[in-house]
Length: 226
Image 1: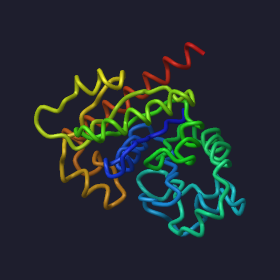
Image 2: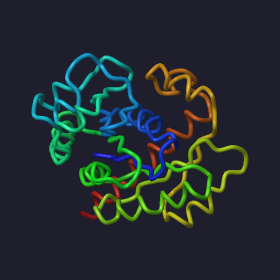
Image 3: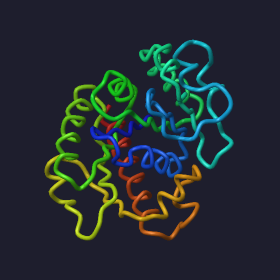
Image 4: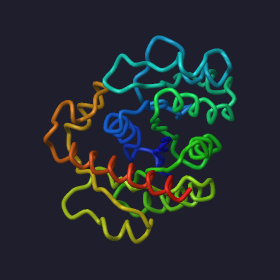
């Protein structure tokens, strides 16, 4: 299974959701935000090296942390040197060996967003309970549909009391899981860990488990149809 995590608007917590899904699905997380990597990098080769043909995708996977990660480089020069069209084959190579992959796509509508979605079997869309964020999410949903990355679920992130779950579901046409705004998520992410490692019985940990289950169900449904 290859699951893309996308969000039309930056700053909605997309990388946090990708890390949490990687933990719940026992998947390798590929940080495919080529210009603004947000997940912890190791000392070995990274995605910039893979896309530039300097490294094999499997040798760039770091298994040392709580979640296996194919990190992205953090320099603009590295981003420019790579061929983004190699992303699909790189992700597929990782899936063949590890079984499940979560691709943390960049925000916006640039070509590298499309490559992450093109590689994916399904997508999780991350948005926030704000009108402008939902408008961006609608554009990303349209791109995912065009590239045949079926929308598995929506993560309505950093919600307070009474999140507009029903309204978002009607707008985006997919199951919506609201993730409460909780400082434990941010603290765990700063340490490169999922919140379930810090607070396994917390509401955010429960909601990320729900989001992972929705993703599995959507993947199984698409696989049975095919």
